[in-house]
Amino acid sequence: MRPKIAVIRGDGIGPEVIDATLSILERIVEADFIEVRAGKRYFMETGLPIEEGGMEKLRESDALLKGPIATPTRGRTYSSVNLRIRREFDLYANIRPFKSYEGISLRRMNLVMVRENVEGLYSGEEELYEDKAITKRVITRRGARRIAEFAFRLAEDEGRSRVTAIHKKNVLKLSDGLFLEEFYRVAAMHPGIEADDYIVDAAAYRLVKVDDPFDVMLLPNLYGDILSDVAAGVVGSLGLCGSAQVGDNYAAFEPIHGTAEDIAGRGVANPIGTILAASMMLEWLGSRYGLADLAQVGRRMREAADRTVRDGILTPDLGGGATTREVAEAVLDRI
Ligand code: ATP
Image 1 (tube, rainbow, N blue to C red):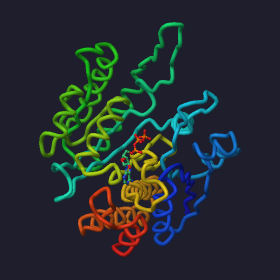
Image 2: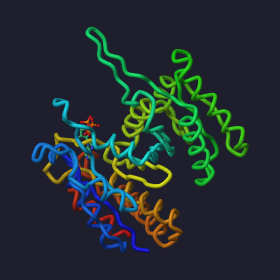
Image 3: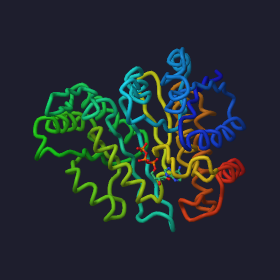
């Protein structure tokens, strides 16, 4: 089977890090890459957040590789492409691995965050009154249960030993209470994996304060959004971290960083996060379609990216002088 991979290059540094990653992928995998135009820049040019027929192109593909997309802060007519993709394909699990590099990272860390991706404060349920605005924080039993199941399965598949649920149950008694209740119910069905929980503010402190702070973290949407930037800071740069948004039938892979307008167009963005996201994509495609070779290439890509960083081939965010292209070439050499 020859996978069909949709590609959204995105805004800001998106096209730079995506092109660098494609220059590797095109050399190591047999796949069709189908560009789908979307994002803020495309919207400014055309008035459309995503090209006509773009969602169909995604539906016909096996996975999506994407760069960061900016959301215009003004103009009510823009509907977020990110949210639309998440909802349309029900990409309920956001997976973010954080692995430290000796000599670069502030602390030793090798953890995976499993962030609930479609509920919580990002429910999209908002009401505006004359003198107040309300955003509903929705946590359903089904949503809490399936994300907990996902986290325990991931721990088992990766040979990890503990899943820690992050919450603020002392204040958000009902919603985080329900999240925790489902977590422990699912934990009881996975006796081989330890289960515990941590209050979100204490978890933020622990992430920066101690080595090996967590193994697998399970987080409601907003906590996952915020704590993943904390973890990226500890690892050394937002540019070093990749992510997967996974549903039962489709998945999207992207770096965790935003559009980084401050450095866009200069050819110095760190492509490692996007390269790691692409390696997760190959592993996911490999295991979904039983393509062992593809999964193997994905692992090699990840190891080559790690080795490139350890060999000191670094972009300016990590104090180096390499360009985006040079880092990509170094990764390809190591594959
Ligand atoms: P968003 O709201 O979309 O997350 P943001 O502007 O808050 O966007 P980023 O775009 O992720 O956050 O950028 C935060 C900082 O990290 C910026 O100074 C940016 O230059 C830096 N940064 C982010 N990604 C990279 C990268 N790949 N390489 C180098 N620096 C990066």
